[in-house]
Amino acid sequence: MDALALWQHYQDWLYYHPELEFYVDVSRMGLTPAVVQRLEPAFERAFQQMQELEAGAIANPDEGRMVGHYWLRDADLAPTPELRAEIRDAIAQVKQFSQQVHRGAIAPPQGGRFTDILSIGIGGSALGPQFVAAALAPVNPPLNIHFLDNTDPAGFERLFAELGDRLRTTLVIVISKSGGTPETRNGMLETQARFQRAGLVFADHAVAVTMPGSGLAQVAESNGWLAIFPMFDWVGGRTSEFSTVGLLPAALQGIDIDALLAGAKLMDQATRVPKIRQNPAALLALAWYHAGNGRGEKDMVVLPYKDSLLLFSRYLQQLVMESLGKEKDLDGNIVHQGIAVYGNKGTTDQHAYVQQLRDGLPNFFVTFIEVLRDGQEPGIDVEPGITSGDYLSGLLLGTRQALYEKNRPSLTVTIPEVTPKTVGALIALYERAVGLYGFLVNINAYHQPGVEAGKKAAAANLALQRQIVKVLEQSDAPLDLGAIAKAVNAPDQLERIYLILRHLVANDRGIEQLGDPAQPSQLQFRWQR
Ligand SMILES: O=P(O)(O)OC[C@H]1O[C@](O)(CO)[C@@H](O)[C@@H]1O
Image (cartoon, rainbow, N blue to C red; front, side, top):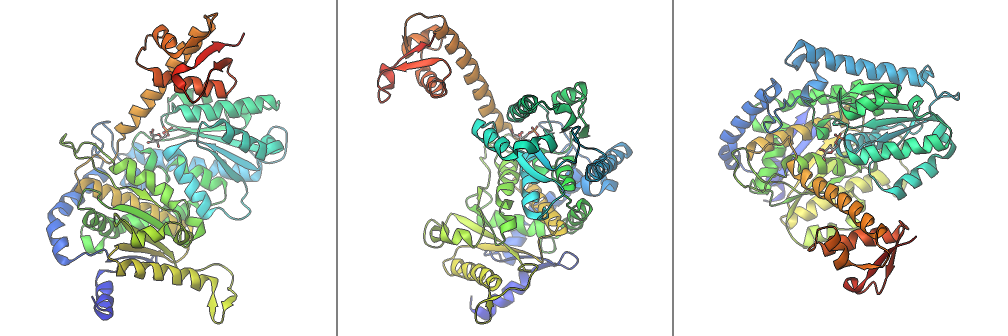
């Protein structure tokens, strides 16, 4: 296409939302009216299914659950008066609690005000709050947020060293929908232990965000924590940013949660329009489908050209991959669906892997996230008539063009500024696009059966570890791997046993290793008495 034809094509495909000043440009995705026509029946079904989902259908059949994240930003849409009240009450509780913390009415028992938040959670109970904090927290927030989203002892040590004395004025939010995620439980126990060591009462600093009745809710209740915020059965972890999971940390940091919700609500209205070319989420789903032949054959590389949006790609990784990465479709056929997502930020990534994007494997499409407003201050000229912001914009346009010249598809989402409203809209846009795509390829986008396999295997390894330690404790002589394997009734599990032992040895857990580490099968292990 020559430049003028391309300009016309750009305008033909451009989506613009006037109130949000939000653009979606899919003109570089190789779409044609014929593609739209071919997929129209599938989209009609998807729009219908989405309508049913929003009306309260059991859209997550395996788990027998409704999928209600759209109600969180427009409670009027929830199917029953009880649900509507629950949503409004939860938002009111978040606001009231945050205001009390800001005023000092809820304060650390030793005096002063809470200065820091320690948010403990993983996956959907961390990624949204992390993204929103990085994107929107003011430079001097009323409370500084920190995250524990792993069970890594070195990570715990580092964070508590950073907090130092401020542990006294730290408010701990333990976030877990299920209330039973081991990594989060570990983070909570490690934190509790640090409080104890510092002579502080953990319960006076702790709040829980979880489903009523969960294990975490019981711990919080029985120990008299400061507060418990409800998480709902009908909100999935990866779509929980607008529930108490995301709203509580945001409100505590002074982020305008009403604006966040309003942006999402406006985007929801726009993405309910049952016409592909007038619906920005449908346009995204269409572009993804077309790029990857409806089979995820192309990866989604997400490049926000704005430092504060760095975590958007990580946030989308869970939203897209946990939702769409499925072995079976809704009819039980093996389909191995999914779209791989990665990316950090532009222009930085241009000095890292964009080389491969332009010249290497053509197995991706790029999503540029463009922010029109450069910053709050007028920029200086870094060259005559050119600011740093002009560079950022120029590099985005240049990369888009360079990719197009090499037949590498890209789409561009443009927002005017990074504000609570536009971030709310961005999240809502992708939630809907993922939902529509899920319907297009006929999968359940709201469960995550694959995650369970790793969890089960981990639990089995920990049980095996206990057995290994017992065997060594009871043996006077050093044992080789074969003898240990026999004693724990796992004669063929030599590799697993070896790997478990290697970790224990490295951590001074009372086990000594004898022999040459380069020859694992010759090693012997003994309990250090
Ligand atoms: O909020 P929870 O229940 O602790 O779950 C955390 C995360 O774990 C997962 O279930 C995956 O194991 C995610 O879907 C979820 O966001």
